[in-house]
Image (cartoon, rainbow over all chains, first blue to last red; front, side, top):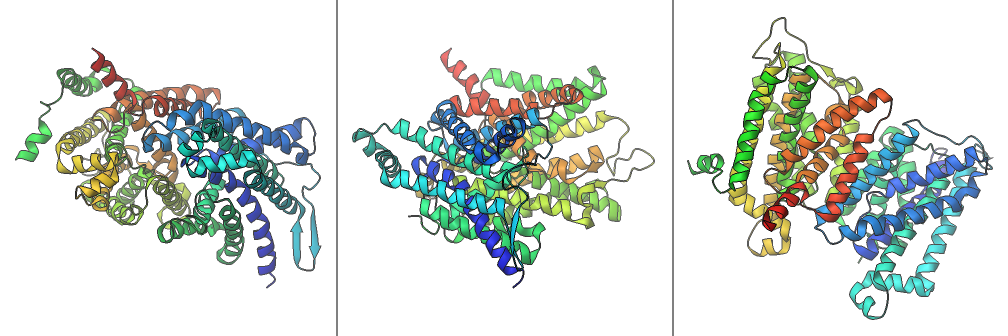
Length: 286
Length: 330
C-alpha cells in the first residue's frame, strides 16, 4: 500500500500530461488519416523552447508556455503547408516515410545545434518542490503539469465541440468532401489540425521541462507513449485520448513500481500490441 | 531451369540499364586494383553491405509497400549468432552463417505472422516497438556481452574457414558475390509469381484479395526473405569488423537508414536500393569523417531527412522515378 498509493497518484498526474501529448496526434489523425511521426520531436522543440527562454532570459518556466505553444503552432502549420499537403497525394509509404523524415530532421537538427547533452531546468516556481502527507509525496511540478494539461485539454475540447471553427474541423474529419460543399475551407481546416496538434504538444513540452530533462532524442519515448495512447483511445477520438492517457499513466507508474522501473517502457509496447491486435478500433473508436 | 534463366537474363530491361549494370560489375571488379586507399576501400565494402540490406528491404518496403522498420534486428541476430558461436565454441564462419540466417529468418517469420495482422501505420509503429524491445534486450543482456558488445577472437594466420583475411580485397570480393547473388535473386523475383502478388498488394489490398491472393501469407513470405538478406549481411558484418555491439547492428537507426536509403534511391524498382546506397553511404562516411573532426554530429542525418522529405512529397518513386520520367519524355 505504501508503494501503491504514491504510484497511483503519480500515474494519474503523468496520465494527464500523456493525454495532452496524445491529443494533437488524435486530432491530426481524425482530420486526415495520417500519423505524425514527428509528434515527439514537436514535444522536444517545446521542451528546448522553454529551457532556452527561461534559462537565458531568466523567465519563470511556466510563463514560457505561450511561447512554446506559439512555436508549436507555427511548426505544425508550416509542416502542413510545406510537407504534409504534398504527401497526401502520394502512396501510403510516402506518407509514412515523409513525416518520418520530418522526425529525423528535427531530431538531428537539435542534435547539431544543442549537442547530445541532457539539459535540465534549475530554477522555477515549482521546480524541486513537493508536498508531503504521511507517506505520500506529491511533486509540485507534476501537479502543476497535470492541472495545466487538463486546462489545455479542456480548452481544446471546448474549441472543437462548442465553436463554429471546431464544428468545421469536426465536419472535415467526418467527411471532407461534404464539408467542402458546405463552404468549409478544408485545406485550412487541415492546417488548423496541424497547428492545434503542434500547439498542444508544445504546451506539453513546456510543462514537461519542469521535471524532465530535455534531450534531442527524448521525443521517441513520448511519441511511442502517445501512439499507444491514441491506439488505445481510438484513433481520432478526443475523449478516448484523455481516458487512455490516464490509463497509460497508471500502467507506467504502477506497473513500473512492481516489475521494476527499467521494464516500465516494455509495458507501453505490450499495451500497444494488445490493443492493436485485439481491439484495433480502440476503446472509443468507431 | 526456368528459374535460373529468369534470374540470369536481363533481356527485358532497356539497353541503357544493361550497360549500367555491366559498368557496375566492372567497377566493382576492378575497384580494389585501382584504389589502394584503405578508407576508400572500407567505404566501398560498406556500400556493398548496404546494397544487400537495401535490396532486401526493397522486397517488403518497395514492392510490398509495407513500412517495416526492423531490418536492424535481423542483421543483429545473425551477426550475434556468428560472433557468439565463434567465441563460445569456435564454430567456423561457414557453419555459423547458415545458422545465423536461420535465426534471423525464423524471427522474421514469427514476428511477421503476428505483425501482419496490422496494416499501414499500425504496422509501422509496431515494428518500431519491436525493434526497441530487442535493442533494449541486447543492451542489457550480459550473457551476450550487453552494451560492451562481442569481440571475435583473431586467429594467428589468415584463415578462410573463419573468414579472417590479411587484406580487405577478399572481403570486398565476398561482399560483391553476396550483392550479385542478391541482384540475381531480385531479377528473378520481379518476374516471379511472388513479385506480382506483392506488387498487387501494394497497389490495393482489397483488389489483391479479391483476386485470390492470400495477402497475409505473401507478406509473411516476403518479410522472411527480407530477413534472409539482412541475415547474410549481418553475418558478413560480424567477420568483417571482428567486433559487434548492440549500437552498431541492433539499433533502430540502422533500420531507419536502410529504409530512407531505399526510398531515396527508388523503392519498388530494381536498381533503386543500389542508387540509394551509392549516394548515401559515401556521403555518410565522408561527411561523417569531416564533420566528426569539427565536432558536429548528425548533419548526415539532416541531409537524408531533407532528401527523403523532398522525395516523398514530390516523387515518391525516388531518384529512379526521376530517371524513368526523364526517359519517358525523350
